[in-house]
Amino acid sequence: MTVRRPTIGVFDSGFGGLTVLKALLELIPDAEYIYFGDTARLPYGSKSVETVARYAVEAAHYLEAQGAELLVIACNTATALALDRITAAAHVPVVGVVEPGAGAAASVSKNRKVVVIGTEATVSSHAYRKALEARGLEAREKACPLLVPLVEEGWVEHPVTEEVARIYLGEAFGDGFHDADALVLGCTHYPLLKPLLHRVAPPHVSIVDSAQSTAHAVADHLERLLPLTRAVGEERRACPRLKFFATDSMEKFRRLGERFLGHAIEDVQHVDLKE
Amino acid sequence: MTVRRPTIGVFDSGFGGLTVLKALLELIPDAEYIYFGDTARLPYGSKSVETVARYAVEAAHYLEAQGAELLVIACNTATALALDRITAAAHVPVVGVVEPGAGAAASVSKNRKVVVIGTEATVSSHAYRKALEARGLEAREKACPLLVPLVEEGWVEHPVTEEVARIYLGEAFGDGFHDADALVLGCTHYPLLKPLLHRVAPPHVSIVDSAQSTAHAVADHLERLLPLTRAVGEERRACPRLKFFATDSMEKFRRLGERFLGHAIEDVQHVDLKE
Image (cartoon, rainbow over all chains, first blue to last red; front, side):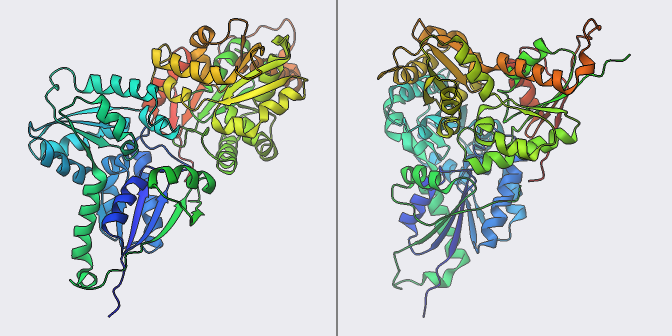
């Protein structure tokens, strides 16, 4: 019997979602992946609900048309602002990053008190606060709009980035949040800053990155979606197939993307969403 | 005889072009202005020629449809990457910011050697270097991708911004460019950083902002375009009419825009470019 490999569509406004794709490739190597980066319209983090929802729904339709059987919204802003709209518009299951991230925070926080950092739009939506409060945790959300451009400038270990992080985290962990013991990275760009954030955050704080927990949520969905392809003992072909689509320059996608994914990006195609 | 007021369309990817609009309002108050900010797709500075040109041509058509008789491309990236394409697509005269900026630099630089700072896309296009070399000046262009997000974060007098500017200008004025005596602000966000840049740039350097020289270029065009409306001695009605259009949230346009324009923004309408 031939094992059918599922086709997973992964969507982000740009490059950050590649940190989620990386976790997916490690956990679920026997799949086909289609990654869509809306690089011509990034960043989403400073934009309104209406605009982000419209862009995200277009991307979801594009990935479905390419054969995706499950969609991963590997963008905190799109998940926070538009998961409901994407789910309503899609014909396949949709997994976002906020619920898995909140679940991971709940499992590590002993004090039941966490800080979430993210884009302006993610923080304004309070999606993380709602997801964490539903699990009985107290949350403070802090917008850190400079961290994405600093990562894209490649200053992931730069003194300026450390100073910016010190200012943002100083505010987030001040005033009654000194005892928060988890820091949720509520933006898929931030995992690249993990070593720096470990130095800057208070020493008792665990850093929670939703990439791993999102990958586990996807694996659970696949079990339900395609149980026959996961028969125990069956040989797994551990060589994922990858295809990338970007709405802006392919050369830049390759160059910046490799920093996020950690290895070479080969098959990138340009997409025009008929704007 | 009634003096007909010209209708001037001003275009930018977002808010920076408001620094040019401010200079236009001071020099040419007796006009109607239509400002278009493509806030749903900003920033242009990190995007490719193809994408920027497509967006800019759409904006130009929109402004013409609203009655603009002259278009001001108040965005360095759009001017540098797409002025030819916009001019070819438009049915009215088009004025960009690069030529006026280069002209202003040529008139202040004694050493005939200047530094231009701008976005990644503007610098890669070498539009400023070409315009300056055509005037017999030597130019070094330096991309400063963090300055726009720092301005949008409101950190225009912040120690972090000063440190970032010190790093960028240190590189730009190093290695054979110590004697450059003009700094061209090749991005319409940068005028908000003028006091800080004055402190950080070498003391003998003049700062050149293309807003004023662009306004003068527009005035010259109007003289040719509508000579009868400018009869000497005629009473001028010094009360410009302003209309704003933005592709993303109107509330945010008002809030951020007022920082750039220096006074209240009232009449903003949302535009959907049918993406």
